[in-house]
Length: 309
Picture 1 (cartoon, helix red, strand yellow):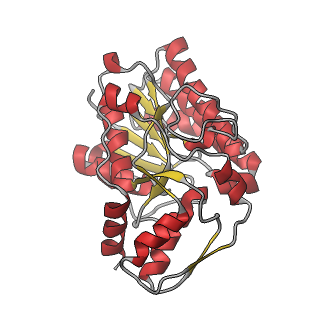
Picture 2 (cartoon, one colour; picture 1 turned 30 degrees about the vertical axis):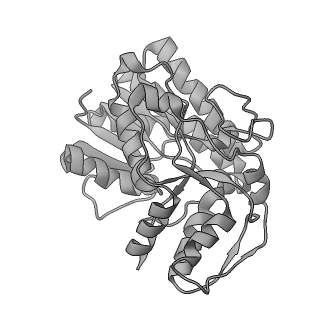
């Protein structure tokens, strides 16, 4: 599949801020258009775009002749619990506007990340397959589960090439945490490098699946470029690199910073973490579009430290 004009919504977020330069290096800056509700006057390609404004979305896709969209604009789990109305508007209405405008303008591809947030307390805890019980307990999870179904509907009803994958917690040194329940991992590493101790908002044994950002970016591109004939699934691929608890990350960091200490004071985010699984089955992504992560806990921690220094 060839991409001529690529729109990245939510370009100022954790993933978008790294996906834009990643795609620009591969396809060329003139073919990648970053957009966000927050203005960016330093990038001449930037489109100031509120995805909840249907007219603005349609005008932007038409004006810039967009043929593929990486739709990343979203309100994450912890922020979504503080403002569920905004989470619904951005995560559901925003996606609906993107899908409608894409059908109208014959867009080739709409790729939207989903999340482990779609799972709930009734979901199995380990090696969770794609098809399983999904009863999320957060507005974020509910909206992301709805997004998966919307993508499948628009593919079946209108033939739109909608695709998506369920990201685990994402770790990155380039952008600050974006309001997610797994943000402790980034915060803990940053504090260790700064020579400070850390107060963790999750319990020490809260095991969750994780992924380093380079693997996340690579997985987005691989899914976008995958042959359609190979895909048995569309919007709900599980992807993961490793699973870790806060205590295990603390011990890994102590290999580099012996005096580093973590105290554990769980807050409202613990309830969210308790509803999510500890590991995922990513075999469908492996079989259908050659998903292959390159970073484990050790190499992720090592690379984060080397760059944060």
